[in-house]
Image 1 (cartoon, rainbow, N blue to C red):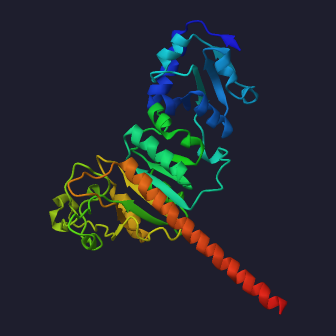
Image 2 (cartoon, one colour):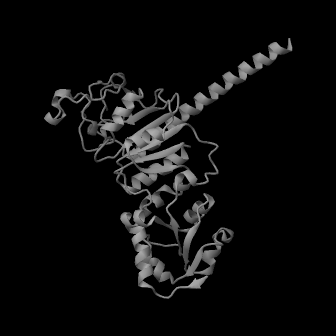
Length: 340
């Protein structure tokens, strides 16, 4: 352990790691702040390169046996306040190499279900962090992020995710071909869709027109009117000759998670990409929507993610329990016949 006198270079480096996505990606570094988040990373098998702390008591809150190869540096609390972007910093900051999700140790994976979350162009850090937290809480198998999403290691994302980065595999900056490679072979991909709301009757909700709008009209877009009845002729001339995907709509509480499942949530500004809807069509997925009261704007992406993921988890757990009972009944019948 050593003391660090006031060092402009060190201060600038820490601020760069915390606030510059380009710097983080180029240097392969991330910054974690606070005892809980640092401990989550240590439990996942990630070792920090440097830990900055303001008092020895703050350092002792960490598992010191996991910091044997780490450089420990005592600094003034005023320095940490400068480096931190929170109002009340905890007095401990650590710099890690950017973790590889395939090498992390996820110790509490026994409650996971065959459900993947695909984040498509999610640009709000608070929303993305909350979505990651929901995915971890719902026991998702993994989370896949398309290129265009906000940096998953941005400090605001880390704070909102509450340790989710170290509780399930998260793969950022993926092309759509790469996303398919991270999904099971017989997966069904569904897309969240707020454009097929209907405030006339529940019966009407179950008979939403299959004539879809532009792919950018799918997804959780709070600033667009209902476009579910738009005809293909209304596309721009540039889209002429393009075969557009047709994906049936379904209420979120109906049966849709009956095998390995992936759920795509689009950003609130740009909605779902065309590739997302094409993948849903390719895998016989559905457009899932959550009815809301008349004259109420659609839910934001994080709220919708929470509702849909836990509904998917409920359906998959029910399916797994039913399958387990069938296997148990078959085994009992087999042993009964053998004993006769």
